[in-house]
Length: 380
Image (cartoon, rainbow, N blue to C red; front, top):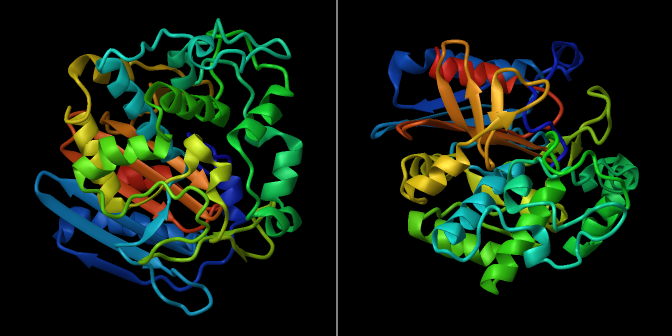
């Protein structure tokens, strides 16, 4: 979703304007001095203005967690390593994994067109579904407009007055797609790259067309249940977070100063296949380790998923099929995805062999330096 960019870290100028931090508290289990850099980087997020952070790292059989800051600004309750939170665009990797499983089963091809599976859906305002493939949806080279960039959507769901008036609205994928298609395409299919949540709205609909079941049911059946991801769900229209969880906070403004609002409760169907899911850090580590370790996809499909395209403005990152390949300062490559939605910023990253993973969440959407946390964990 659009609360924070999928790839870009927060600029230093914005960090300087971040809300004064509450006193930091930290709790950790296991690990010893090997995680000192990560612990300090997590605590630094609170100093930058983030209400609270929860992080879990896994390497081999060893798991380590740390938290900092506040989970509830009203009560002062700390964050928990077991917190469940909205994962935003990390949902995209689950959707892409299901589509690649379907390809492995011979039920579709990445080179199938949108027109084949959703006939007539992209047949307006200069769009042509016969020229946009499933692969283009998954790697954001389709040129389809992102409905979350629509000015009316921004005003209705991301401004203070709009959010509190409309956060429980029921809006269908068809309505969201109509908003997107009312705008001209960004570019001809395959000609460039532009991150668009509409791509995964369409991808989820293709999952449903191929299988005859809801995309969330396919994720539960194919990924959540087999991996025993007990903290992970596709909530549909349920507006609350399951326990244990912290509150989620946002500015509901383009500015990083001003009042902080509790934005925990909302109808996540606004995000549909692009960012609807809820999970926790341990589950996301398990998912990405299983994915990169070859437990969810055959080698051919995993290779397709890791085939990347250039991302303008991100020289150290490339985008695959819902997998971001980042090269860190120490030369290590990590694979995963970021997720931003109201009051929640999440990052999951795993080494290419799936052995070393980290996932963390900030319960605020206006401050923080997530790249610093990754550097600390993998480069230390």
